Amino acid sequence: MTNRDSPVRRAIRTANEDEARVRADLARARRGGGLSREAVGRAAGLSRSALERMETGSRRSTVQELAAVGAAVGLDVRLRAYSAGDPVRDAGQLRLLERLRSRVDQRLGWGTEVPLPIDGDRRAWDGVIRGAGWSIGVEAETVLYDLQDVERRIALKQRDGSVDHVIMLVADTRRNRRALAAASHAFAGFRRDARTVLRALAAGHDPGCSALLVL
Image (tube, rainbow, N blue to C red; front, side):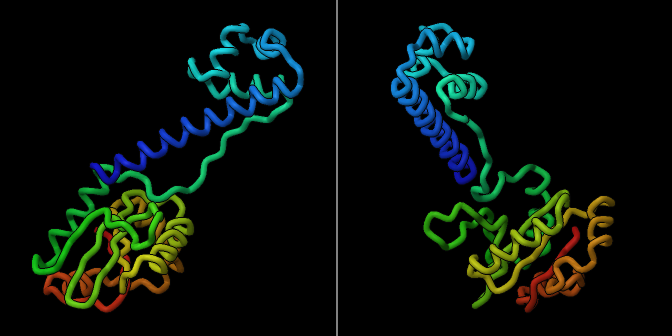
C-alpha cells in the first residue's frame, strides 16, 4: 500500500499549495484594486472576518467561496484535472493479476506496481514478469470503457517502460468481450492466442510477443 499511498499524499500536498497560491492571488488582487475586506466579503457573501481568515489561511475555503471572492476582485478561479500517473488498483484488478501470476512458472520473476525507469515519472506497470534476458510489462483492466485511451496509454508505457513485450490483461466478462469484439482492430500488434502465450509462461519461456489475454 505504501507505493499507492504516496501519490495521494502528494496530491493533497499539491492541493494545499494550490489553495495557498490562490488565496495569495486573491488577497493581492483585492489590495491592488483598493478594495476593503468588507466590500469584497459583501459581494462574495462572506463576512469581513471570514474573508480575513480565508486570506490568512486560518480557515479552509470551498471552491465556490474562492470563485466568488475571485469574481469580486476580477479574477477567474477555476479547477482542472491533469493526468498524473496511474490510478490506484482495486481489489478486482489485484485478483485479475493473481489469476495470471498463478499461471506463470515460479522460476520467473514477478513484481507488482513496478515504476517506469524514468526519474519523476509517476507511472508504473501493474505487473512485470522477468525471465533470463527478457521482461514483460502487465496492465490489468477489469472494465473496458475507452479502448482507444487504454491502447494509447499502454503504447506510451511500452515506449518508455524498458520491457520487451506487454500483456494486456482483461477480466473475462461479457461486457469486456463485447467491447473487444466491437473493436477488433484495437491492439493490432498484440497476439490474442491466450493458450499459446500462457503455455509459454507456464513453462518459464518468453512468449516472444505482446499479447491480449482475457482471464
